[in-house]
Amino acid sequence: MNNVITFFNKKGGTGKTSLAFSIAKDFNYPLLSNDDSVIEEIYPNKAKIMDKVELIEHDVVYDLGGYIDPGIIDIFKGSHAIVVPTTLDINSIKRTINTVMEVHRYCDNILIIINRVKKDKLAKYKQSLQALEGLGKDIIHLRESEIITNSIHSGKTITELYGESGLTKSQYKGVFQDYAKIIKWLKKVDEVDEYGI
Ligand SMILES: Nc1ncnc2c1ncn2[C@@H]1O[C@H](COP(=O)(O)OP(=O)(O)OP(=O)(O)O)[C@@H](O)[C@H]1O
Ligand SMILES: [Mg+2]
Image 1 (tube, rainbow, N blue to C red):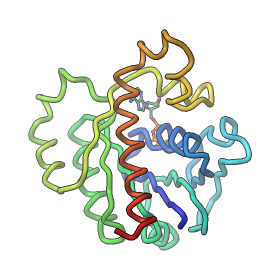
Image 2: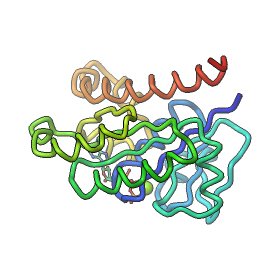
Image 3: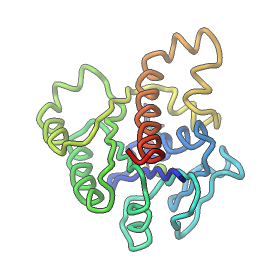
Image 4: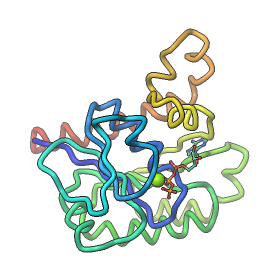
């Protein structure tokens, strides 16, 4: 069975494209987007930007811009998982809650990624984060790290950059552990689907 993973948030600048690219390339899936970015240059032949994206019968990652139209709703409905990254600020968290409540109607398998986490900032956003937790969806934290910008610049995934040397393995250990949780969560969704459990 094909696996469809969709990255979406009505709030922009939360890490959708960076994460969608890294996950797509790590899974060797095509990456389709309706939002302009560098993905076609860094992931040639596998990434495509189009005015209108459609649901395809294939393993695929979608990186969708922040608006909802009927075509996009079909993609939500056909998704095995919708990943909603948010940055750690109240406005972004509020719009993320709103996004999750909206897309939940079409696909309830939703992973929220609290992105660009700096540990010392978590306490400050406690109340907003509690509201986010109240949605009852799985949440994974991904720390702030230059590996994300390096990934989009180099066209190498987070896994590839982490694995380059002993030095990168120690430098990126923490952020790679965070990322590995995302990969694991997405693989679990795939397995559940595969065996119909
Ligand atoms: N964990 C992180 N650590 C450091 N920088 C990050 C992290 N996640 C994302 N960024 C940076 O945040 C910026 C926005 O990321 P990205 O373009 O992936 O978001 P987006 O949701 O696709 O934005 P848009 O709505 O504009 O399409 C980029 O400069 C990216 O490098
Ligand atoms: Mg983007």
